Length: 545
Ligand code: NOJ
Image (tube, helix red, strand yellow):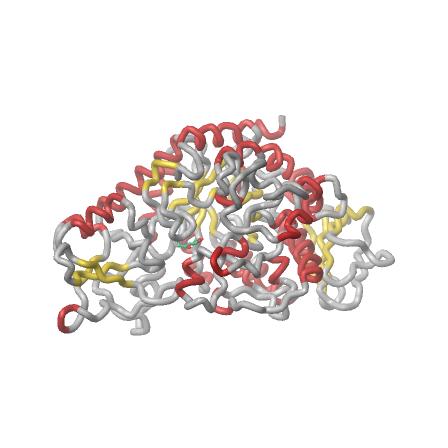
């Protein structure tokens, strides 16, 4: 069978479709209102039918969930809310039987404040070696009352929290580039490197095909703790993208390559400078990294074409494939974002009450799905985007959990709105997320959520789900879409068109006037109805040319 063959291919990932599972919100088998691994196992046939090659799980490890699991207390244990290690092993094996590989999330920049190392460090006095695995530091000024640096957190606010000694007196400070519950590790400490290498092997040995590396460019820090803003050459920023971070990934790559089927390293690398970005993709480092440049661009022909061009140009220097990402668990859902006046994405711009036209956004998100699925490289799909879910923007205040919301003083709506539990069925108290008689979902679902249910969409030829299924099937079936060949072709102003291989052309129209299609023998797939043979605004089509 096709799928069985794929599992023995090395290089399977170069044009893969990778589906991101946010386990907490995917499906809840035990009815406690939180998604779990048994829920994912139950829905594996759905994922196989969608046609994905791999699943990337956001962290499923034991965690107090101060940041949706990106605060890991124990890498070798599954969070009890999600299941057990045996469940994870069974899930990995079940998925593989369906030809679907598993990628797990590794969060090397920080651990949970509940991690054994941090507890030990907190209990130890200043100067104790147990503190050296983190960044404990005396404060400045009299009494050490002043924060050691003014580095700012991507979650807003300070990056140091002061400890309290056993006598109740204020003690040293510790560094956390995210929330205080996520102390940063000191990557100059040999234990930190050794432990992560052991964790990689732990999961690779359990059959996972790769790891997604969280905050990958942030691990290394300048131990002299200079302020940001002082002049520093590339690679010498106090805490971002420092040159020595690459040594970590070179060592990881050797481990990944030591397996019969080489394992993958996928980087979460947010860097504006593409030259610095592709350094992570050199042949002895990561296999690929998320293309956030493309994801953040507005719905605009020129802006997207420019990103596609610069992505290709940057990747030409390395053998890593480009990746195409429309969203993930951190960003506003495309259906909502593309319906706004400003269709670009930036964390700093997120505000309550930004108007959106969801019908418009849905049309564009469908066209964007065909655009990205037609590009050479790796396609990432965030759970629920294949159902056309909008961002849930009216969550009750008391339901929100995201530290980004709280640390912004309530100004940033946070990321809960893209993490609402999935609707599987049109009716029922949790729309099929949990079984009958279950606890309420951990985040409330909107009343009309059932209108997006997977079950209803399955039999609707015009649905988002059908579009995604057809696109992914064609991507696999059409040799032109499997290869790397790509060439821009002439098209109407305000539209984009490119040919893949010998015989497939993708056209996307962003302009008000319908675009004439190039000569073709067949419309393979379109994101919406054509108008008298022309391509309307905000529509994409794949043509046999
Ligand atoms: C990136 C993850 O995607 C995000 O969800 C998390 O909050 C931060 N890294 C910190 O781990």
